[in-house]
Image 1: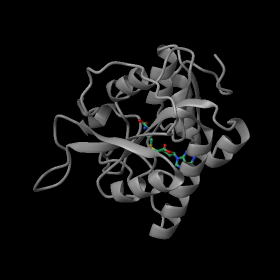
Image 2 (image 1 turned 135 degrees about the vertical axis):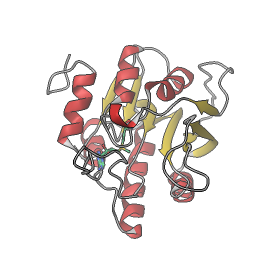
Image 3 (image 1 turned 60 degrees about the horizontal axis):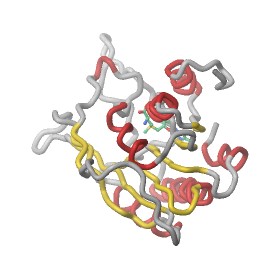
Image 4 (image 1 turned 180 degrees about the vertical axis):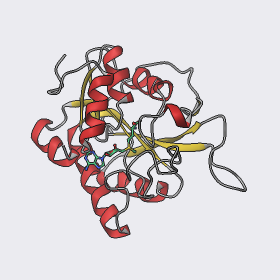
Length: 226
Ligand SMILES: C[S@@+](CC[C@H](N)C(=O)[O-])C[C@H]1O[C@@H](n2cnc3c(N)ncnc32)[C@H](O)[C@@H]1O
C-alpha cells in the first residue's frame, strides 16, 4: 500500500529503530534493459514522473511520517541521485533530521551516458537527534561503498539495490530484534537483509507485482507472514 497511509495505520510514534529507504527519484525511470523485441522490461516506477511541485509534496509527506515514527537517536538512510540530492537534503533538515554524511555507492563499473558515465548514487545518512548518543556497529566502514551493480539481465526491479549495499547499514545502525522499516520496498533487499540478520521488518510497496516479488524473496506468503 501507499507508504504514508501504511505508516499512519501501522506505525506508532517513535516506534522504529532504523529506516533504510530508496524512494522514486522522479526520473520517469523504467530501467535501461530491453526485452528481445526492444520493449522496456519494466513499467515506469510509481510516483517517478511527478511535476516538481507534486514530487516536493510527495517527498515532504513521507519524510514527515519517517520523522514521526523513528525513535530519537536512531538513523535513517535515503538513497538518491545527484539530481534530487539538494531537494532531499533540504527537506530532511526541514522535517527535523540532522544530516550526518553523504555515503557514495560506487557501482565499480559505469552505466549509461557519454562523457562521465554514471557509476555512483548517493545515500543521505541522518539521525533523529537525541540527548544520548547510541553507538552500534564498528568504525571500519568508510563512506564509500564499493559494490558492483546487479547486471541488467539479472535485475528483478529497474532500480534494484544489491544486498551488500544494504548490509553495512543494518549492521552499523541496528541490533538484533530491532525494527527496520522501508517506505519503498521495491524488490525487497531491505527486508531480506533485515530478516536474515534477525531484525524485525515492516515495509510498504504500492506496486502489487513488486510486493509479491519482495514476499517471495523473503519466503513469506501473501499476508507477509512466514
Ligand atoms: C526506487 S524503487 C525501490 C527499489 C528497491 N530499493 C529495490 O532494490 O528493489 C521505489 C519503489 O517505491 C514504490 N513506490 C512508489 N510510490 C510509493 C508509495 N507511495 N508507497 C509505497 N511504495 C511506493 C515503487 O513501486 C518502487 O518499487
